[in-house]
Length: 220
Image 1 (cartoon, helix red, strand yellow):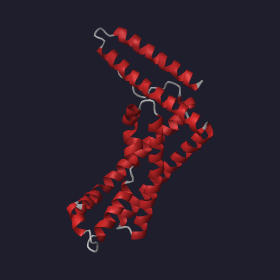
Image 2 (cartoon, helix red, strand yellow):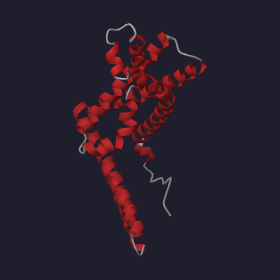
Image 3 (tube, helix red, strand yellow):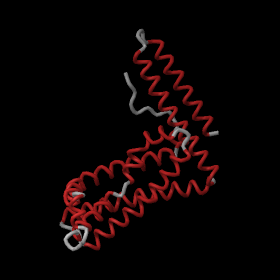
Image 4 (tube, rainbow, N blue to C red):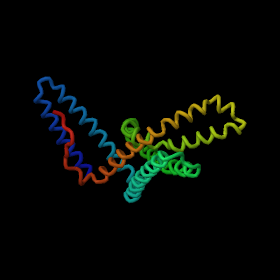
């Protein structure tokens, strides 16, 4: 029923775009509007088909439980990143604190990446799904904090390890230096993407409430 309502709404918007297209002598702007709407409709249709496949595979209750878990983990990891950034600004973190944040990052991001792998496996158009979810779902889910922590540990043990030459050959010290320099920027970038991800999930979760054809930005 919800899918039928959504498709009906898409059809009405498509009809409106066709009418606007007829009012333009050259039609270029109307064609651009129509193409954007077509891409948006394809993306939304794929999301709905993917949701139906997930429910058929796991059941509606389990899918809802997973969605709630992912949303909770997004908020949890966002809070951990904020706390870690605040503590790091006051001074270097202790070894136990670094280990805690790193392993928490790995554990939570493993759940995110598992969900992404499941969805891209079931997606009708995997390439389209990857393009749409690459940044906020995949790239932001890479455990950058854990990678930086482990690279720093290997660098600190390089003087005692027998693989010192290999580590130098792999330019590990330079890599660790670049990772540490980029860490504050990556933290902010991950916070932004997690905010977008949580907002997107909340909107989709309350689609029946927000499905009122609210236009935030409309071209002239």
